[in-house]
Length: 125
Image (cartoon, rainbow, N blue to C red):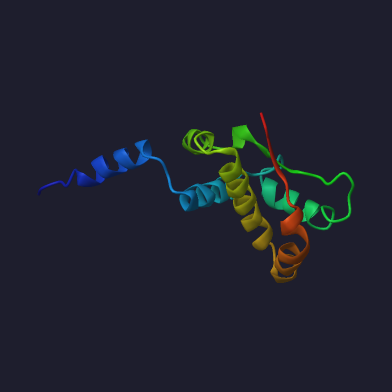
């Protein structure tokens, strides 16, 4: 039986190359969705999105959606570090926006109309 090593070579090279903006957004969203809260059952960033959903449009100063860098994997951090400021803001807003959009139908509509234009994302160590 012949083993095809092309898959292993391809996957190695894909880790070295820069990812597309779409892939970075997807990876960011997946990384954030996987993070569990301190209780080990709830999704940390989904709960954060629920809490912020109706507060962002009315609170002054407007709260940020805070992401902890330790919740992101090393490959994703390297890809984010390569982005310029404007693209980074776009990627962060899109990745976090998908969490809001995944909450439920009414929350999704409210997010798209009221929250998305105001959303600010911050990174902390």
